[in-house]
Length: 149
Image (tube, rainbow, N blue to C red; front, side):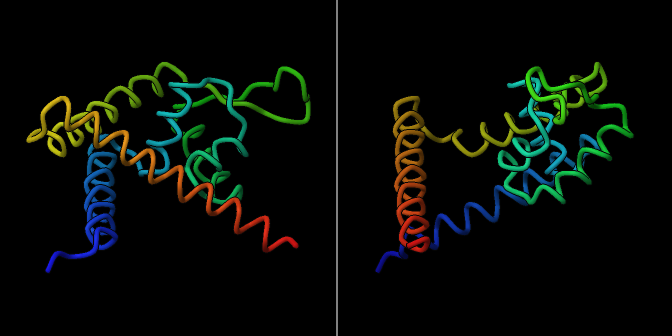
């Protein structure tokens, strides 16, 4: 009898998280710090609330991450282009270097994860995982709408 895919995915998530935590630590970062640096490398000028959504933490937790990254000289705050009450963040030279180092670790993890797959299998896995995420997100939105009624 085969194990349910949910258990396999949960184990994979656990292993990925532990491996990413280790790679982030090797780069001198926590996982949340790494994800923030990666997000800002891809999309400069995000607010604290936007970063909290990306990292999937509370705004209060994100505040602590942002304080640490500012103290370490990895990010710098600036004014929001349209809402002067908000602050947005961008990477400093130090932050860009840290993001590159951590990204190299993440790429190595992905290479180990998919090393035994063909290009076609990697593409199919990517599409399948994305479809699963979208299905659960859609179900979550529907459930949230029902709960509000």
